[in-house]
Image 1 (tube, helix red, strand yellow):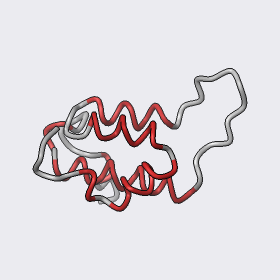
Image 2 (tube, helix red, strand yellow):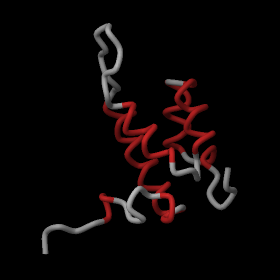
Image 3 (cartoon, one colour):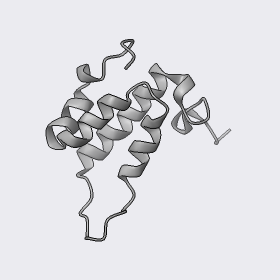
Image 4 (cartoon, helix red, strand yellow):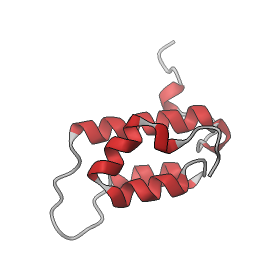
Length: 91
């Protein structure tokens, strides 16, 4: 894990980790790695046979902010080298 930005210091991480410690552990392991994006994206996909209720809105927003923070801290780890959230398609 890169020490340039410590994920544990993020209030967004603390929120996710407090509600879903198993997800927090994985986020911490993948912080600074290219797999971070695919893991977070996978959280939104229903791959289980049982019905899922989804994440509360505050967790979804925290995960989104963590992706943005990851892209800012590790731009070379973004899937395209640049976050889609930072691109402007409305010129």
